Image 1 (cartoon, rainbow over the protein chains, first blue to last red):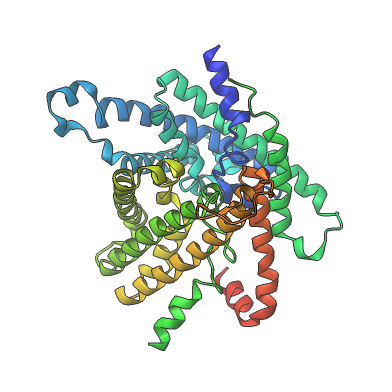
Image 2: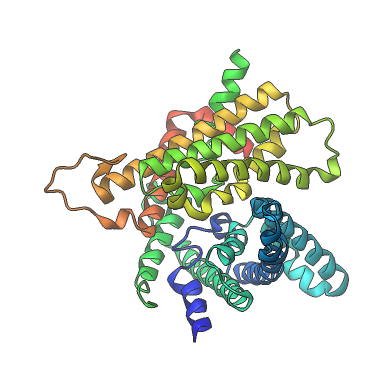
Length: 200
Length: 208
């Protein structure tokens, strides 16, 4: 039950893009076409879950291992968190890219172009930090990372759909182009505000 | 001197990272609910971009081309960690208000972009001036957005009551949707700026 709650909280109530302003570069850059946005969402989901699965044990067993810290405070390496996490994500993206290129070329062709962009996607780094600050255990962090990336994909696909319709809409001149995207996103966020308080 | 001024002023309008190049948006929208937050985030970001650009520019001849991206990330992450720890120690309230967005400076595309495009090729002095220009450009937009949102959403400016007592706060502006709307209007300024500074528009096109 608790896991369902965490999932819904991450996917809808605290939607990574609309409520927390994460990964806006990808959101604006990748939402011009529905199939592209699904591809990006898939790639982000994959890397986020993998990153959570690697960074959580790394933090709790290496950087801030309570047993080692009890021996001497010199083992408290939690100040290295930012550095280690970003390097882990960058390395993971590279590994995934190599692996896909060699073993699953069809998936690589579909996902490949999005992978390098993911390294600087702040949603992934934010999810790995949240796992630590919210004191989740491993199962909870994995569910949280799936939820957050599902929420990311959801709002990406929603905006891609809206953009399709806006192409033919008659907009006032001062709002044409990129400003209209932000106004549409704002309205989408208003809709998502309706979910706040869904989970106590 | 004129050349340095040219480098500095570029970041303020012509190549403004937020309004013209549209990078590094996440932190610009998330923390701008009050002017203090806007200034704090701008200062943190300026610190990181300044030292990252200067350090990388100093070592630009030693950094091997094939390993440059990981090296840039490590340098940026080191300065981000410094800012994070200093803010946690001296301004705990501000640090709490910004939450995860201070550590997220490390993946701010503005820093990575400037380091890659500018600091890894130019002299340290130029890089420092470029970083300051970008920092100021980023900060003024942040302060602008946050002033707008705080005034309408909370009736205050930097914590001081501005609106009369009869003013009913429009909560919408401090909530996430208001952030998107205000930022959309700020980019709308682009059109006006492009009309006023036609040269700016051309330069921005070249940069993009």
